[in-house]
Length: 139
Length: 403
Image (cartoon, rainbow over all chains, first blue to last red; front, side):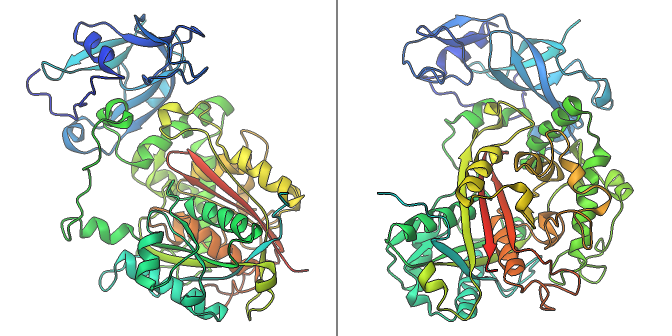
């Protein structure tokens, strides 16, 4: 998608590197603490729950549920052409939360969008170096 | 040994810059700061050279230099619109510790003019470190400023508690009623703004959709504004010509910074900062006779009312229902200046909360310039709460007047 016209993250190679590397291969990678065994997001170099520095990466399910959402009627840059669109915070199946633009929903009918509805990740290739995760309502 | 700082300090004066609102010509953010500081000092009857401490988000050191003073206490805390309540909290602690006797907390912000003049001067927005979590995990998804985040809390509140957009619209309607009693409010009347004067729930419901469920009239204004308060030790406070408004309780708290890290979208840290401020004051929500609550959006005010114990959880908008919180209403008066929704909001609204709280408790809310008959309440106590960031950080004060 050479003409990706929306903001593209400029990842650091340190705390978030494996997340973006995984995304290029369509894998949803999460950091997990090997002391308390909890996954967290956004990626950190310490566990936000027990403050251990022993963090490992694993391939997560790429599944989650809508926690809450909004319909954006005002946007700038590449997003301006897409209004109205739905943004959402997603509860990840493995725990903790991620933000996204939601797919598979009707932005003109917010009443039809259900909290708790299951969603799956999909990756848009923005550049050779960066793919961006979006989430789609399934089933 | 530490001592309870309750009543150790008072706000002894409060003022605005000479111009506020949509200022077309003739001011900068610095000028707004300096005018407000000068006006507050004149009200109290002190010279700027008597200021021992200064608090302002990011700008305290620069302002001290501009004023030509050499402060003993400098507070640049910048956590969004509630920062000023924290400066007051910190000033109270510094006064109680004997470090200073008198401080100024200041605000100057060209929220309106900065949009118009964004290509002038040397400042360029958007040059921050690209390696930060917001740029990776929120900014790529089309969000456009605070309303596009706060709307997510509104949705969650409606779905979790069965509240409606109409419930929250009443907050905007009642707050506008107060603005009609404040001649300096942007939305005071048709004379001050083409869309000014009283509004109805239908007006809110029919206003332009910004970020569903937030509509234009659920959102605060974006203005130019300056304000300042003078905080002094108990001993000094009794020596001025102005009435002291005592800081009975003060506290701050944070639940998150990025909304991505907000655990409960229907709750803020105002529950924690409110509980600690009430405890310091030895008072509770039932003893509050005025509530000044940050209303960046109707949903901010509604949720905060719950957090401060003024309503049950899930029933925040009921505080305003049927105009109860409005002029002559049967409930606790709320946001008597017309709020960020209808008075003035330059980006960081906390100072406006402080200035109006001072005026109400000092009996100065109806002087013809800042208030018309019907605006002055009989309140002798107030709970004042500010929110900063994306429902992230809160500061709460409990203020009381003499007798």
